[in-house]
Length: 317
Ligand code: ADE
Image (tube, rainbow, N blue to C red; front, side, top):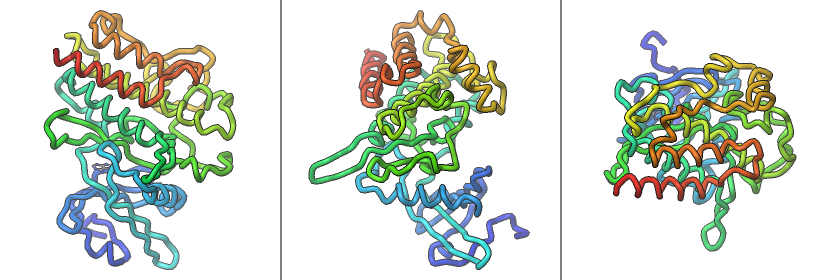
C-alpha cells in the first residue's frame, strides 16, 4: 500500500487494529506497534512461508497457566486468507523493544542493579517456562529452543521495585513436554550463534526433554555474558558485542560454530576485572556453570534465578 501500512484481509480482529509504526522486519515477517481495543500492542505479521512458526506459537499460547510477568503476554491471534495467501497475526503486549537493541544502542552503561534485575527476570521467566506444575492448576514443562537477546524484550517494572526487567518472547520453536513428538522433523532450528555444544556436535540425548532445558540454559548463559559486558558495576565496561563476535563474525555457519564451541572449546571472553568485583565475580561463576560443556553440569533456571536474587540482595547492602 502507498501509506506503507500493512494491507490486511479485513477480519474481525484486523478491523480493530490501528497501526502506528513498523518496529521490526525479518525473515519471520514484520512486527508493528498498533492500538487494539484501547491498548498499545505489538502485532507480528508472519511470513506466509512460516505457517509452522505461527501454529507452534498459537499452540503454545494455548497452554494453561502460561501467563507470567516475565513471559510476553498474549492478547489475540488471527488468521485470514485471500485465497492464494494465508495471513497470520499474533497480537501481544507492547514493550520497549529487544534486549539486543537496548544493549547495542544504549549510550550509558548498564547500572549493576539493572543488569541483575534483567538477568533475574529472564531466569524467572525461563524457570516458569521449564516448570511442570501439577495439582489443581496444571502446566506442562516447556522448552524455548531459541533463547537469544533478540528474543528478549525490555519492559518497565510498574511495581517500581526492580526497575527495568525483561520478558521472554518468540515461541515459534517452543515445545511442550506433553506434546513432544518426533523432533527431527522440525525444519526451523535455533540460532547457530546460541546453539549449545551438544546441538552443534549432535551428541544431545535423543527424545530427552531435560536435555533440551539444559540447551536453553547454555543459550541463556550467553545472554548473561552480553549483559555483563555492558554493566559498569566494577567501574569499567567494554560495551556491547555479540557472543563469539571476535571468533566467528556476523553470520557464522554451523561448522564455524562447531569449530569454536566444540573443537576449540572456546567461550566468550571474561575480562580479568570482572573477577575483581565481588558480586560480578559470583555472577561470572554462575554464568560459567551455565555454559559447562557437560549439559548435566549446568545449573537449572530455578537455581540461577535464586542465585541472582541473592546477588540482588547483596548489592542492596
Ligand atoms: N518487538 C517485537 N515484539 C515486540 C513487542 N511485543 N513489543 C515491543 N517491541 C517488540
